[in-house]
Length: 637
Image 1 (cartoon, rainbow, N blue to C red):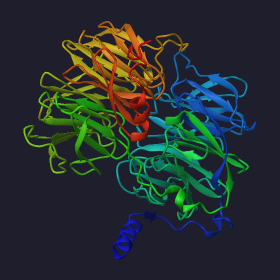
Image 2: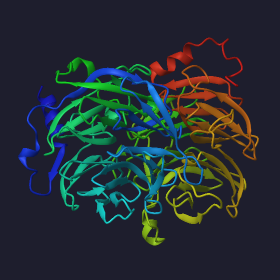
Image 3: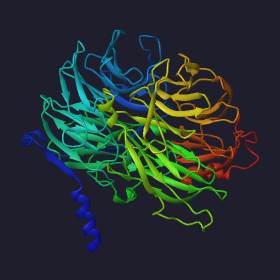
Image 4: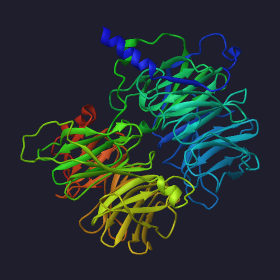
């Protein structure tokens, strides 16, 4: 009992509430308890990566679908009213993210493909805000004739007037009071106070209208009052509501910073819904406070809830520490495989000598110190698999971890096996090279003694040696990179997957010349459509495998980036994928596929036939139980 009390005391101290100005007025907190959004009403399914939502004045919910480049207009019963296809002024596809509805009927949509905000007027007119100013816009809020945009590229919130000027900024990049690592959403209350949620720290912060910091609520963890990648923020009914994504819940705070309550039941079964939550990333509360909508990108759905004041059943959610699942990057050697858990953050090391991969250790801890990570998204192995290189965009860092294994010794779990070898903080290049913003290493590849690090901020790659010392900067010709999620260097060619541009490009290694390109068509249709390309693995014929999160398919491209074949499709069976991300090839030619939507990794032959699966047990069962006679063609279509 004493140990439990000590643990509770320690966890309580980890919740930090900083009041850096006179306390907010007591009268700001209304009488009565705000509701919990816990009474399930309806859900809308089959969306294409819904990421944000807002209630329109006509009573419809406007949902941004990133993969679909469109807005879905939903009725409160979850049925679809209509869709609005989004195109930029140049006719290209928009990558919608944040969304906001204004009192005049206009809709604001963040376009991450062009780093701007698109304003859709009720009369059909379209204007652009923030172009050539914003870097990585995330959430948006409009009130009193102004627009606030949370920009993780600038590390602050920018406030624009109707004419596009931005005389006011809130916060600054960094770690500390009033500073942001990754601001992702913003809301403004009736008093003009600006509330910001920072997923990277994580914390929420409140500023006065003049930019003075009033308070912060900070802390990482699964318990109430702490956060795990908070994704959105709303101000309604006199309170502040935070969508706590990786804790699968919504937390409600008083405007003075005190936690009022937290609610949400984690969905533990595959694709479970109807009131149970799975990585909710967007929250929209109706203006009259009658209902709320929660957006779940991983599940491609939106759930609708009414409020109640019932105390939740404590037995419904005993399992709280469930944030981490394998997703993103993966790398394989002859007898070693490394898979990442960005939400942990964590890296898992597997032995490949048995039929099924066996986990032997984990490494990385949360934090900015040496050996720490905030969001590890990409990994590469040295040819002998003794060094694992990990890219973390939030820390602007590449870390090398030494894993020296005695392959003749009996197999065992060894938490002391990994050792920090070296690291490089690329943000130092911001000062040396005079960059406008810190580098964001997002993809990484090893080639002929060189480590290639794709930087989404710079639109190019940093080429490092094995000791992580800078050799040179490599800049490609052609369209500027928006969101490079995979890079591969094969001979004299450099392959790049640019996710938010919906493109795969092949460049000359020597001078960066654009040789070939496979890109999405404006109509987003056809058998070779590309909705959200993410991972890449080299193929023995000189081409590459490409994963597409939007279609759940794996495409094989030839040397000229033309589609040779397509395998898979959405589902949980063999050679079926839900939001496939990381890809890698092992020396024996096998293809490994990380599925964000199914919390698992599938192992395929070099021809694309199913071999094995590992990961979350319930998500693996459908593939393991499927008879060998089914899908004998390996799922090719």
